[in-house]
Image (spheres, rainbow, N blue to C red):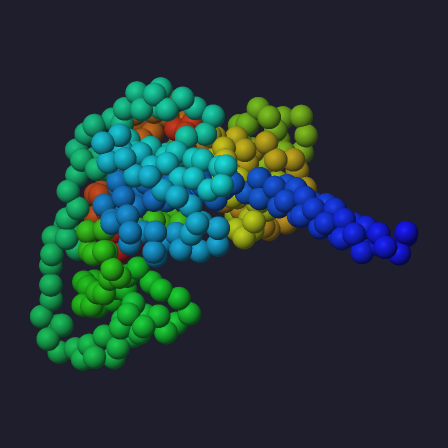
Length: 354
């Protein structure tokens, strides 16, 4: 009798074992993927929104060039040109990013969308989005010296870079200057001289320059401890703006981009980037350990914002004291949901601007 039933018993055992293994795989997958969903959908929504509403690029071009990697490529994206917002979905995850004139695009996190849209950018002749993008600084100036140049080697490099992707990846644009003017430009599909492109970490250099301007104006002392109340009960009270500028604050931080880390959580899950960064615990004494940190740069932007009597002056500062003076009148400095400019990553400007 046992021998007769043995095959069926084995079949049942195999079925139950397979079901159990499948359930474990599903549960493990949920545990692994669930924390990544806000990052996956947040990245897609924020970047697509900025590329469409700030850069005025084609949705299809952005999805095929900018979003065509990792899980990001599998997001389902809805672009509403009337409401000027983007909704991105992946599995059960969903994120929304909205456009506001002057502010660029903001990912909705821990904030009411309606109240965020009610915040207006100070309209003036220096406001981004309200100023025309002009040619090479202050006009399309050219030089007769171009006539004596052989551009064929540069044209070959440009073609290899943009068209053939010979150098390990694709580029949005390629620009060569000679004696202060462009002599060769080449752009990827849907991108041109007037297309604003994302700075990513080039924004950190702008933050450093703006900090220097505030030091020159006597509004900041980078060698004094930063005035952050959350730091006053431990050794973080000794962190200076200079420590932050040099990325030697000693704050615990993870800048890995390939998974869920401090930088990906800050940019895609939180409303206040600076608060997320300055609430990190100390890992080293200030000034003793260097570690690359986008969080440190956003803390600096928060500290600069605190110096101004109102946000109108704060939002106008970058344009009036830096962008316009160097010919970047159309640059857009985006903010997080709390209203602080994202000095680690989110400036949009043309290739000529950069």
